[in-house]
Image 1 (cartoon, one colour):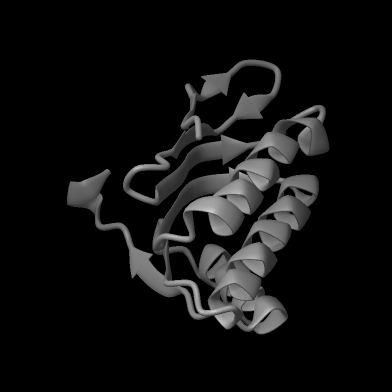
Image 2 (tube, rainbow, N blue to C red):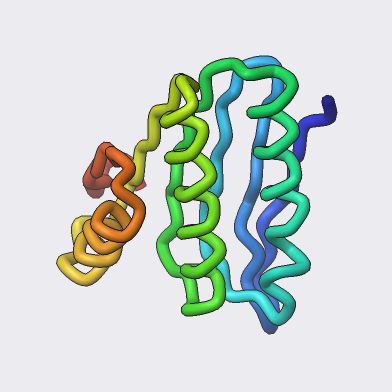
Length: 131
């Protein structure tokens, strides 16, 4: 199984940095997600999660470090969280950490994800020293 490594880009649209490691099960989305073709970008990530949960069946540790995401990206993030919740219900070991910039708006968005998906998410504020 191949890993996914995508270097984030800030141009007309913002592409998040992606690091999905099939050996460790550590997956990270970092930066900003404001894409022209959101579904096209996230579809390989969905496929990777499906393949990992169906073939490797190891622990998954997801770290979200997104400082901004638009509405279409938000839908894709919910889809990822739903996939993780399904895997967890099937007995998979899942840990989700969401790092946020200590803004009330960002915190509310993550809390909405928890309500919508039912997935336990560790909400971790990023201090000024960590930026």
